[in-house]
Image (tube, rainbow, N blue to C red; front, top):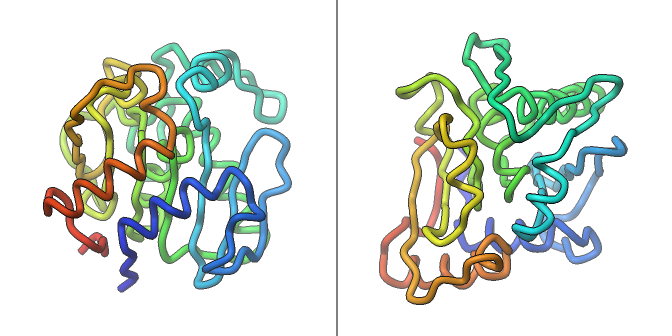
Length: 217
């Protein structure tokens, strides 16, 4: 069973936006797809960056997203059925499929998944697909089905209460165990940044609001 420290996951999630900052575990491969960012680290850890600010999320993730020749809208409620039968947000599922196909091409099956923002949306879907543990920070809602699904307990979602992204799309729900961390001061538009998530994660760990490590089991 794979176990990862939550603080270590937060450090990697922040570093994921500048691959040169990823030093331990060692970066092995990065996805070559123009619209999808994903990294495989030593130990078969899948690291999924997304949009590091609320402004980026609103400007890009909620506008039309093109993957291949298909056009998806991230701000509507269009759904698609995954391989397991779970009903996902269409755009997030399409993003996750690109990562899944890339991993299949390079013959990697992840043992642990870490993601932020759009990457945290994909983390929810891929932890279910692979049946492996994962941690998502600042995660939007991905699932149209209400109630838990298989492998639900393997994914840990850590959100700030002052971050708007985890509240959208409003009619969807998260896949996983959700921890909403309270804040002393509302950061509004900067709350989505992984830099500010790292600070609140450290405080939550110190006060034992969240566990030190995550194994999903």
